[in-house]
Length: 316
Image (cartoon, rainbow, N blue to C red; front, side, top):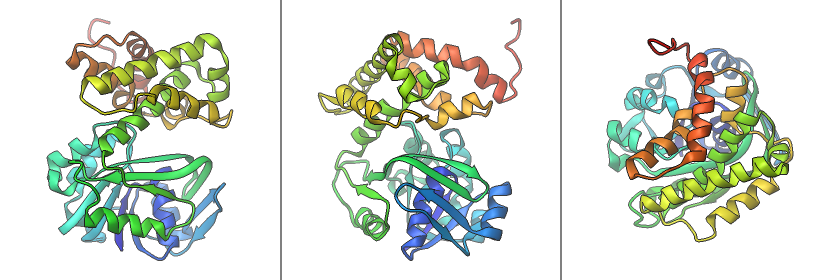
C-alpha cells in the first residue's frame, strides 16, 4: 500500500515506521532537522515493543515531491491540521482517503472542510512516545494502538479493511475498526485531556498526580465533565467510560507524561485549545457548566500565549 505520513513526530514516526518495516511504501512529510536526519540517517525507533532502524527513508518537505498516494495519515499536532489540509492536494488521487490521528475531537471536521467529507475517516492513536532527537523516536509505554473507521457508522468499508490489513502486517501495533469511531475518539479524549491538563498544571507525571487525593479528585472531576459534554452532543459513550478511563490512568507507568503537558512545561506551543480549551468552548455551546475544565484552561492560557509569542491583551 502506498501511504503518506504527514508529520514524522512520535505518532507519525512510530506508526509510519512500522508500516515501512512491514514492507509498505511509506513517504514522510517532515521539516527542518528532522527531515535532514531522516534523509541522512534514516528513522530510528526505540520501543518497548521492539526497536528498529529504517534506512533509507523516503521523506520530503513538500507533498508535491511525493505525489498521489492511497492513504494519508495526518500525524501533525492538532493546531497544525488546517495548515496541513491546505497543503495536502498533491497527495490526493481520485480514491485517496485521509485518516487524522490527533488528540482532540475536531480534526476530522477541519480536514473535511478542505478536502471534502467523503475522503475523511475518523481515527485515533494510543501511544506513549516522544521525539528523542532528529530522526529518533522513543516509545516508552502503552501498547501502540490505532482505531479508525467510517464517520457515518456504516461499518467496515473496503478502504478501512485495506488499511487494517496493512497494519496487520506490522509488528508492535494493535488495530481496531469500531463501527462508532466517533465514540472511540471521545473515549480517548476522555483520557488524554484530563491527564494532559492536570499534568501541565501540577507539572508532575501520572504517578504523582494520581497519588495525591486532592489532585486525583480534580482529574476525576474533569473526566466527568468531558463525559457529560460527550453525551450532551449525542456521543454514545459506554456507561462505565469514566471508571474505565480512570483505571487506565492508574495503570500508566508512574513517570508517564502527556505530549501537551511536555510541550507546556518546555515552553513550546501546545494543543491546549484543542484539548481542555475545546471542552470549555464546546460546553459553552451546549450550555453546560465545566468549572474544573475552565479553571485548568485559564491557568494554562498565559503560558500558551507566551509560547506562541502573543502580546498581552490590550489594556492588560
